[in-house]
Image (cartoon, rainbow over all chains, first blue to last red; front, side, top):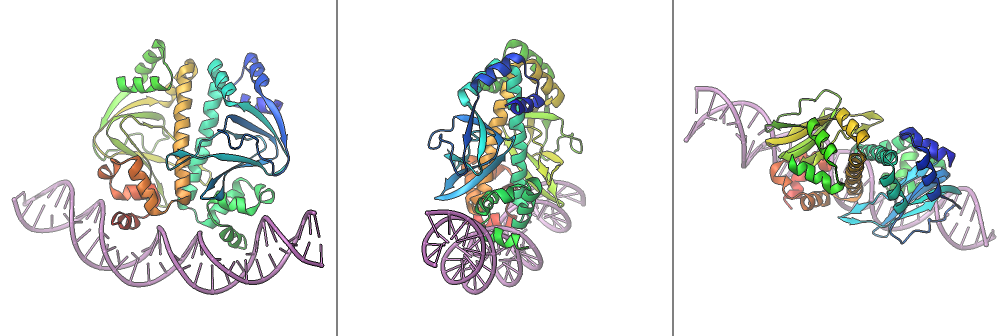
Amino acid sequence: MKSFIELLNNYAPLNEGCIKDLTKEITEIHLLKDEHLEENNKHPDSFYFIVEGIVRVYYLKDGKDITDWFASKNQFIGPILNIYGGKPIQQYVQVLENTTLLVIKNNALEKLYKKYHSFERIGRLIITQTLIQLSERVIALQFYSAKEKYELLLKENPGIIKRVALKHIASYLGITLETLSRVRGQ
Amino acid sequence: MKSFIELLNNYAPLNEGCIKDLTKEITEIHLLKDEHLEENNKHPDSFYFIVEGIVRVYYLKDGKDITDWFASKNQFIGPILNIYGGKPIQQYVQVLENTTLLVIKNNALEKLYKKYHSFERIGRLIITQTLIQLSERVIALQFYSAKEKYELLLKENPGIIKRVALKHIASYLGITLETLSRVRGQ
DNA sequence: CGCCGAGTTGAACTGAATCAAGAAACGTGG
DNA sequence: CCACGTTTCTTGATTCAGTTCAACTCGGCG
């Protein structure tokens, strides 16, 4: 919780009142390996911060499980509304290790945005950061070979390989499990 | 100019003082077909709004000209810092038709963000919108065939085909000009 | 011990890239 | 308004990275 506030403070200074209001709206939850956030099958209505552990965000495409995003310690998961053919995709969040999360409801988030300018600023900065990350991914998908995409992931997120099943890595990279296996065999 | 303010107001209501300050910082420029924004070769330091016309944002990858984004009437172009292998990519903006743009310097933008909460909010909302668009593109790149990507573009931006050279469409879609040509021949 | 999910390996297939050549459209100057 | 060169687009033949399908291996767990 402290580390969360600290992290936000790095984006922009938060005043006491805002921290107080924010703290009131946050709840901490613990999930065990392979559990899902219980909000599945609902419209996503919360924002999460990962205190410890690792999760993946995924969706179903033609019945196949596609990993959209990994997040681990000190990272955020927001309801990044994914769109497919003009329609929002139902997204799910699965915990890949025992994980501690902070949760805040979207409507509480909206209220804080409205009430505190500095909080709105932090929201803007975090989203901007996410946008930049995503833009790198677009380039990777457009030009990198399977091997290059795997190596980029290794470079940017070295720990992930040991913690996450390869099938999830494969779908995240947009390649098949078989191709990933061959790439890894050098 | 009016349409610009109106458009912003749709995101969040701006007060008089903010509109006044904003207006002071905006300059209108006119560019002819094929001209470039003169800020090329510099670090991008402005934000644009397209009043009329169409532009493309592109970068060079291994000497090849890759279109990253199209923008036309009533759309924004920000310095969406693209990253490639961890390094920011120099981006260029070329006008594809005679075009009228509004320009605001980044540092003026930052001042307005700081001064007006409602302006910061608009910034957050516009970036969020961009993020959603980009997330759709990630899915398209991961799963769509060349034909499907082309059809998606046709559906979402029907006018663009007649206004933009096919080679730019091709590099935007992440396919070769030859493949695009074949796809178009049904 | 035997099952089951996860990962590996192999062979055939395919969508798109590449390379190459030609056609069509465009603009500029005579 | 036409001739010429440049740029843009099309078409064809070949190649290749990655998919698909299928069989097999490995490790954990009831």
